[in-house]
Amino acid sequence: MRNVKHAEYDEDSTYGSVHEVNTLDEAAPGAEQQHATVPIAPVAQYTETVTTNRTASWMVRRRYGLTRVTQFVWLAVDIIEVLLGVRFVLKLIGANPAAGFAQLIYGLSVPFMVPFYNLTTNPAAVGLVIEITTLIAMLVYALLGWLIVKLIWVLFYRPPYTTAS
Image (cartoon, rainbow, N blue to C red; front, side, top):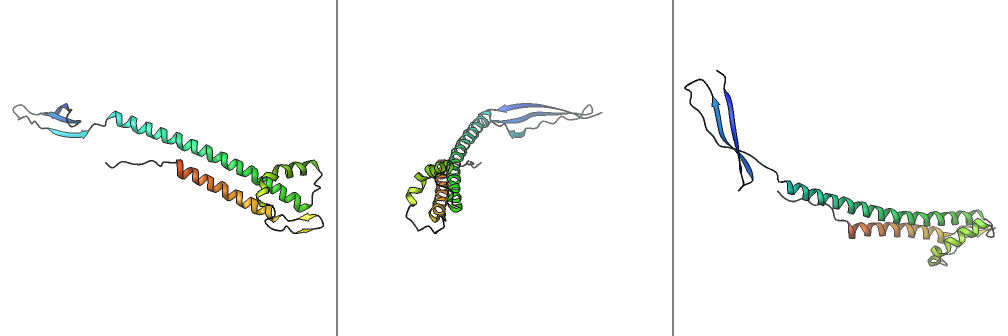
């Protein structure tokens, strides 16, 4: 005759685990029955999963927000860099300062160039100017943008942490 195994399970609320309470082997008639209590792995609690997901979701939203802010900072820095780069090229090729486009670029870039006026002398020859101050301004604004982005991440980013089990 075949052996058939029957099992009953009981939940132990004290320890939050499930135990196999009764194991029965059916064998040939007259064979003795075996009873055993075998512990089974603890049952995971649903509330822990929900708490972890909420924490992860909050962290993802915070990281997304910080990423968007840093993208905005880099966009502003890139606009300033392009403006100053076009100014440098216009001065280098000796563009007519009375032309509309040159007036627009020079007018928009003046607020960003004010801190750097008279910092160094700019070499000029026959209407062509190599504006060293514009190159210095581009370098300073790039470094300032990088510093602001790093500062944002240091001040507001909280990396995910793991708990010891």
